[in-house]
Image (cartoon, rainbow, N blue to C red; front, side, top):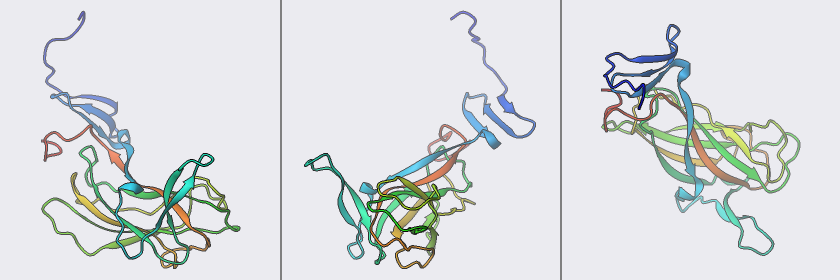
Length: 221
């Protein structure tokens, strides 16, 4: 190809504001790494259909929407009076910027309108460990503010943030063992919506600083 440089480059190339630490780097192996504000966010997505029930406080898997007399589509519905829950695990991906915080949130909706200012509170119980480390006592975080900041309306898609998980000292391929639940008793927030809430998905926003890891078990060599 005309103009193609066949000779090796023996220094890294930087794009962005290198002086202020906000840039993307291509190193001498041609691998990409982002720094500072050049890092980006993505979701670790946990579909509710990939979760597991515990057998004691299970939500109901019930039809949500249909086309006339079709079978329709189904969703997990959580009670307004009993703390119901699902279980799942998360593995941090190779493109995650190790050591940075991650931000869990839930996507959900309701099938009947709520009263003025009513809230649904969601909770996440978790424990997080690197490969080779021990899992510890669980932590529990809650969220009761939906991102639209308005009264609950039937069939509207809402997001509720569940706080922050500190990533200090954590590495890619670390695992998080989780329980997601509706805080129907209001232990950690306000839950005064008096009907079932349908859970669509559990997500974790995480920061990306590379396309992957340099080696299978080493982020940067």
